[in-house]
Length: 143
Image (tube, rainbow, N blue to C red; front, side):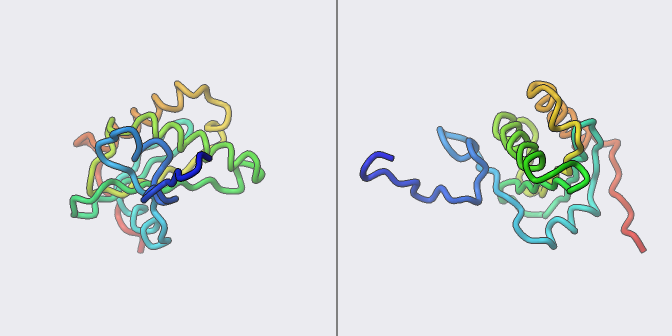
């Protein structure tokens, strides 16, 4: 790093590429388990590489996104590879459907590791379109 260089307020809570270079709204990470559980009761969209869940928070803060890759998908190396690919897809798709005031959770499937990157970003865009269409209904809370 160059002397005197600092990241300023760029901390780990932002996805890489979303809060730099004049991005309009930074996307922040979900950090609390309760937020992941709450998103489970919202809308869902199924795609080949992942399941996308969405919950409206009712405020106008930037969208928050959480990634989940279970051990069923593979070992630690595979899971980390999938998370890196999903973060890149999110950063490249920023502004194309993540609405302020919403929490999003991506639950990765094994296909996320082998799909070409263009197909992964297209699946993300398609999932966001499905979520925000009027046909989607909220999931009933389990009893």
